[in-house]
Image 1 (cartoon, helix red, strand yellow):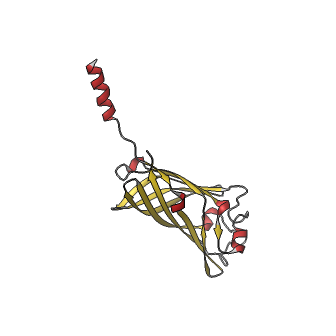
Image 2: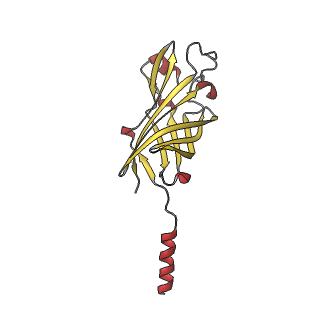
Image 3: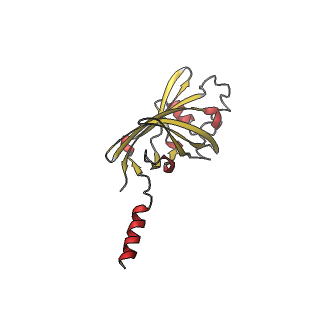
Length: 184
């Protein structure tokens, strides 16, 4: 009996420990974008998004992110832009109200900095996306900041009304700030 208990205990300690899972703190997190419209910068944000995050710097092979962004909630300070974004030529929220970023490849760049490689699916199109980010973990709280640039043509955004980019630029910088707490 003692040998069986000893065997069970040794197997329990030998089992791999899963990477840490994190819960996003929405009030301390943001997902923003900018674009050139008529030569001026337009700043926007996606106030509604969720993310399932599994990340431990010591276990990058187990790291995963699955974020869902509510495109219908996108907002800017410009009423005309806000009126256009949900439309069929732009985010087409009637057909695809959300975008989804899934990443399972993480590479360390230098201490506290990483590169996430994944796929962003929007408007029914899936495009590879690389997101360099900085991460600071302090106890049970993690703060991640990152930025990437998307090309709206990759998702066929605005191609009916502005295929040449005369009114709206093609590059769309996207900034991410996530504050998350370690799940028990």
